[in-house]
Image 1 (cartoon, rainbow, N blue to C red):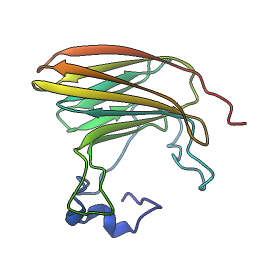
Image 2 (cartoon, rainbow, N blue to C red; image 1 turned 120 degrees about the vertical axis):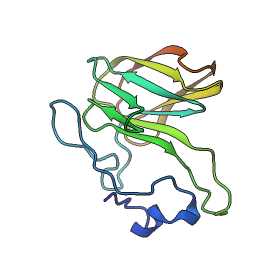
Image 3 (cartoon, rainbow, N blue to C red; image 1 turned 45 degrees about the vertical axis):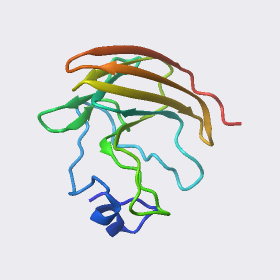
Amino acid sequence: MVKDPGFATTRLIEARYKNSFKRAKTVRLLGGGGGQQPIVKGGAGVQPGLVITLDGPGSVIVADPLDRFIMYDAGLDDYQTTIPGAVALRRYVVEDIDNELDSEPPVDMLIIPGDVNGTYRLTILGEASGNCHLSVAARNAIQPTWSAEAAAGVTNGSLHMYTVNYQLESST
């Protein structure tokens, strides 16, 4: 079961909040490596790294500088990863807590720990005709340090490739 420390457990699965999380899922790391690292550390700030969101009819493939990856698996309808500590959410819905009838459109959200500096390769894989919006933000332990956005018209099977140069900045 997934427990978000910011919300009561039942809030994650209540349909009236339009959250696409409907069932408990097991999460496993593909390949070797250590256990999962927390994304939030004791309220002291967010773990440094990259936050990638994709809005539109597509999925995103990420390869880090060590050639580890996050990739969407259509057969499982979920993302798979070989990056330790990475979190990938398919069709995540950000709810409006002030108006439960209003919410943002679902997005794919990938959170990658920032312990590896270098060039990250991102590929949007089109799943249907339409427009995709890709957003990448880097964080230090306290706040966002930079962000970038790209838009692409996609069709089923089209590929749009980008690179992101990431360097962990000191939070002091």
